[in-house]
Amino acid sequence: MEPQITVITLGVNDLEESLGFYRDGLGWRTEGIVGTEFEGGAVAFFPLNNGLQLALYPKHQIAEDANVDDTASSPAEFTIGHNVASKEEVDDVMETAEEAGAEVTDPPRDRVWGGYSGHIQDPDDHLWEVVWNPQFEIEE
Image (tube, rainbow, N blue to C red; front, side, top):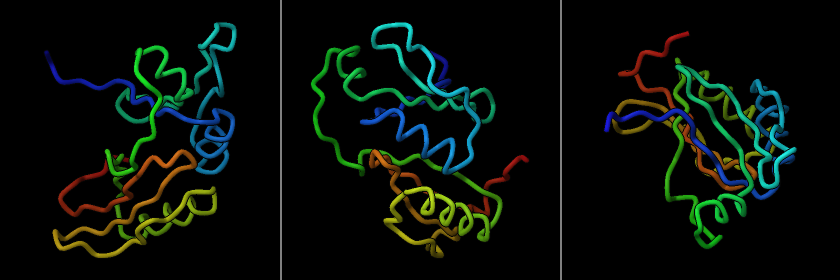
């Protein structure tokens, strides 16, 4: 199997609220909620870089589709990294996210490995790390 990820789907409790956070609060492009003509098909897609898509899908529907229990989860199960080109951009993104309704769980700070980052939680408690890593080149 060739390693490849094309879509990251986040299970959300309220699709409209989460759509508003990413679209209106963070300013991400989307066509909004699509698939409403299908039972259990409502989803919102956000194109990211290199063909990657972020999808928002009702958590209860993921559980039903995957035939698993819809149980409580911990925000510490995984993080989504949002790398930026500078320390100042980390601060700007964190501020924008907080104004959009994210909870800042870890304010931006210098890290022992030489970078600078902070953590936020979106309205569904998904944990994002906003990070400047001097070893990464960010393509504009």
